[in-house]
Length: 209
Image (tube, rainbow, N blue to C red; front, side, top):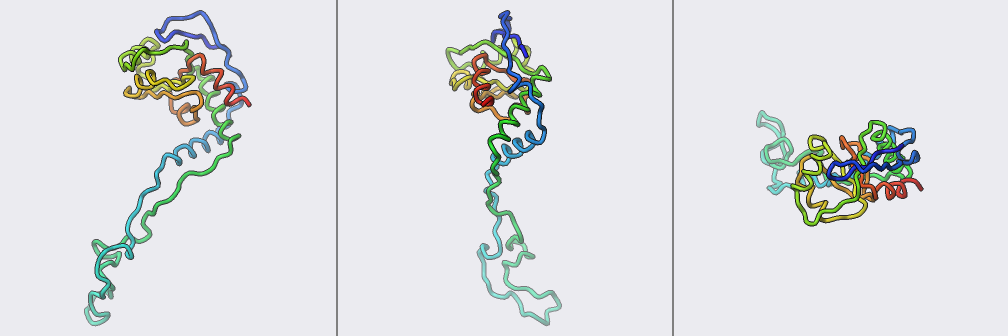
């Protein structure tokens, strides 16, 4: 599949890049995508939620009234879960939400997500570029030149670049990652996938083993 390469200023270069069918043209596997997205979101959870049970509440453990003869229900101490300020019954406790996903399943999910983007013509290829300094205005201008300022975009650069990453981090609906960080969730979540020309080969090497 050939995709035209444009400059970051929006001008055409007259060149095209071929996206390999092994990465951008497979038979998509929806279940692999679901598993990888579920794993990604689970890994984002801290799992630090906690409520105090009755043995963790501070207060007297003395029985507050006699067992019988009061006309009311029997009761133990003030830490009883039925009383205001008492302990929580079966409350949340810290736990680990992440789960292991086989590497082959993750690779299949990423290739499937990239294939969907290619089928939907939602991939843009731009020439390698760099900024002299972190400038949000420059990055916003680039998106406008490409006609993507109203869409949710994911820019994939070949390697870490502070000036580019800093320029786009404050822009709404924009995310910048390196080729080695590409993941199913970010690809699916973006309306338009912007690949810097040099990152295409790195994605191929990463997923086409």
